[in-house]
Length: 281
Image (spheres, helix red, strand yellow):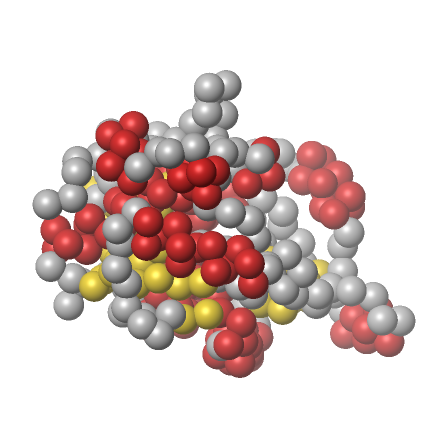
């Protein structure tokens, strides 16, 4: 059976952009005769808050959405993500990176492949790595992209929406722009790219509906799916909801929240019309 998902992080209150994505995912599930899954992506314990998670349920219910229960919370499945990381470590596809953000930014600007591509690092020698670990230096586990691509071979994914450049149909995977992405950090544990592919497979997600800002992430996630032997869902990337200034709505920019919309009397039906969505059947 087909399945879609909406997977917010409880790091703030939901806004119109979240509503648009959740409604698109819900309607895609209904159109396909499949399941709609809610997932709480709360692995970053430094930023997630219980009040934001509670508000997610309130906001989605106000929108008229229904989802499967129990809801999967990523914080309750850390061992599964670490098991996936261990598999990649055993295959020699990840390495410890001790570089600071400043050093990474400088390396990307001076790298021969240009600043538009992601960071490329390399494993340290056993001796240097042991010395840094003994000194207690923080590190991140990064995907060794060159080794990963050699192991995965040529890959594609199916785009049923629109990519950042209008791409649609069968897309060749080219994750060079992502570089050696972080898969786990010492402070918060596993990172987004690894957790999301594990959970999409665990929950039987066949169709991923999300904003076009995550189109580039699909390339590296497809590589991880191949390396871990996980199924590849179809992707439906959609337009972003922007504010009066033309910029994407974001929590950090204090975009008007769904709670605030309700407080000033806006109904879910009115919001649907504003977002260009059909009323519910």
